[in-house]
Image (cartoon, rainbow, N blue to C red; front, side, top):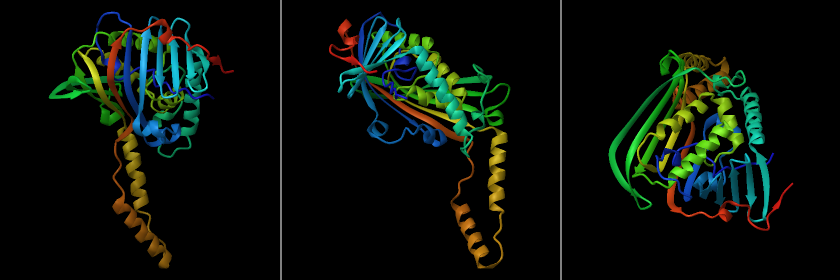
Amino acid sequence: MTRYRFASVALVLCVLLGSAGIHAEVRADQKGKVQFAGVLGRMVNLFGGRSAREGVTTSRMVKGDRMASVSDNTGQIVDLAEEKIYDLDLKKKTYRVTTFAQLRQQMEDAMKRAQEQAKNEPDAPQQAEPSQPGEEPQVDVDFDVKDTGEHKTINGFDTHETVMTITLREKGKTLEEGGGMVVSSDLWVTSEIAAMKEITDFEMRFAKQLAGPMVVGASPEQMGAAVAMYPMMKQAMSRLTEEGAKIGGTAIQTETKIDAVKSAEEMAEEQKAQADDANQGGGGGLGGLVGGLARRATRKNQEAPSSHTTVMTTTTELLKVATGVSAADVAIPAGFKEAK
C-alpha cells in the first residue's frame, strides 16, 4: 500500500487554535513532528529517519477548495470539491490520486490490522478489543485552561503561554476508577493572525468530510491504528479542536502529549502479575540459588506499574505567514504525469 505522509493535513494542534478573521488566500510555513510511544510505536514503526528525529517543515497554500503542501521532495494537493488527494513526487514529476472514500477505507483497514496485531502484544491496552462499527466509548469530559503568565518571542512573534488539559474518563466513573485519556497541550499564543482563519476553516471542512482524525506528520494508516488501540483518541482530538478554537489569538508553538490511563481493575491485574513474579522462588541447588538472585536483582531495578502511558507526543510550530496565492500554486505542476 502506498504510504501517505500527510505532513500537510491536520485536525490539530497549531493552526486549528487560531480564531476568527477575514477571508484571505494564505501561505503558512510550519514545522511538525509526531512520535508514537510504547506498544503503538512498535506497531506503526514510526521511529527512525530524519523526519522522526527532527520533524518536517511544510509550506501550505490555500485557495478556495484546494490546499497545496510542499515538503522536501514531496507535495500534496487536497481538493475538497472533488474529494480527492493528489500526492506529488517532485523528484520524479509524478502524482498519485486517492479519493476520500479510498482514504477512509485505508484507515478502516489499518484499524482492523491493529486490533488483530494487538492480540499478540502483551502490554496492549484492554481498549484494543474490537468494538461495534461506528461505536464510540461513552465518556465524561473535564476541561481546564490557564494562562501561566509566561512570555517569550518565537519566530518574531510575541507570545504568552497557555496550558490546556482535557480529560476523558469512562462515563460515571473517576479517571482512577475507570481509566481514560488525558490530553495536555502547552500553547504559545500570539495576537490573532487573521489570515490563518483560511487554513483553520479548510482543515475543519476536510476533517468533517473525511470523518477521521489526522495529525501533522502521521499517515492515515498510523492514525487508524491509534484509534483502534485507543478508541477515546478520536473524541479527545475532536474536543481538543473544539476547545482550542475558543482560545483567543493564534498558536505559534504547540506541544501536545496524549496519555492513556489504566483503570483500577487494570492496575490491580498488573500489580498482581508483578507480585506473582516476585514471589516465584528458586528451586533447590545452585541453579535455583542463581535464579533467585537474578530475580531479586531484576526486582530492584523494576519500576512499579504506572497508571499513565504516553501514547503520542506532537509538536507544531508556525514559522511564517504570508497572503497572496495564485491558482497555479494549488494546481498540479505542468509536466507532471499520473503514476498508475
